[in-house]
Length: 244
Image: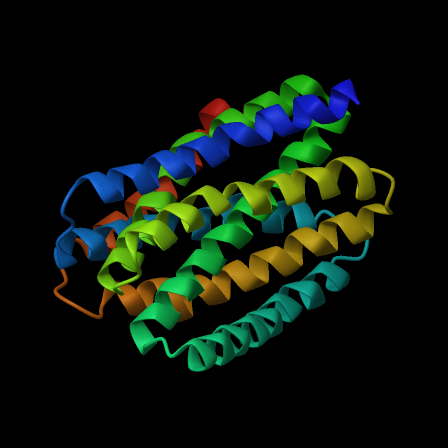
């Protein structure tokens, strides 16, 4: 049980970073240009998570075609998630912007879930590795939390709901950490790697269909592509220098 408590404690670090980003979004008036840049930055980070961590790990499988199919399955999972959000919004009477905001919330939740899985499985292998993975995720999760909550503000979601949703970001990372610690540690390697690839496929779809689309809804900035690539580079630096 002490090992599991350690995993939860480590998973709380990136969750706190994400929540801190949400608090920043609540504390300042966010212009459309600022939100667009934050979404580009967050999109770059998520793409780096997929390209530098999830998929290289997944493709190390003995049967790489299985994780590749799972990656495509992640795109299909996004379609199901998008339809579910649309259905809920139609029942609740929410507008298109609220649906897009909840789509981004779901994408950030998936990213946090993958963080939890990596922290959980990494801690089983070596507690020091789990600590490095957790610390490496913190600076990457701050802009994601900022972009998600700022998007909800623009969509007109009430402050009370935004605070609840920001706090709710802790749920997927704790679920992922629990799954990684208890379930995937004894599962065949191909299963664990396929779960990572499935998450990577869903995240890629969320970035393209939700984050980038929302980033170009209002006033934009020519610096958007720079922030996108800077987000990728930031996580790349974290992966190399912190993860090492």
